[in-house]
Length: 145
Image (cartoon, rainbow, N blue to C red; front, side):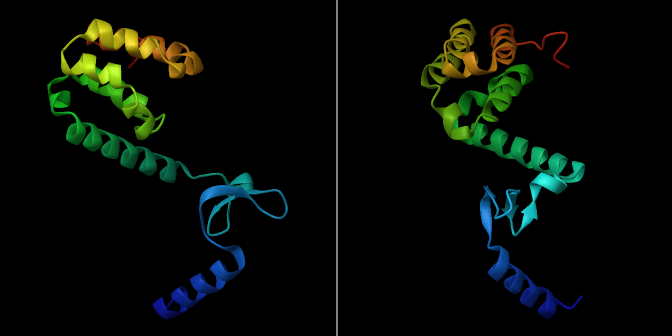
């Protein structure tokens, strides 16, 4: 397929389908995203899911490294907890001000309690309990990996 044809085709399809960075329900009730990508019927490929996961982890790790100078001194298990929590949304994670204050002081007991003392913990239940225990101990639970 020629590049000029592909470019023209893309603009033609966008003129009919539109382009959306967020899911929407199309005219026949199908959840759609991007340029007419029908999530309801097609779902996502394993390759796309794995690729996006890798990109998310790299992004979250880089953001934590950039925003918190002490992040690099945390054990890998504690870093894993913060990356796990970042899947709620990085902006939401940064709202855990008391958690980050405790971590900056090396107070892992308090950091653990701050994880548990959150709306997020009430929403995710066991996940938060496991993350809090790892944050407290600095080691992965035997069933975590």
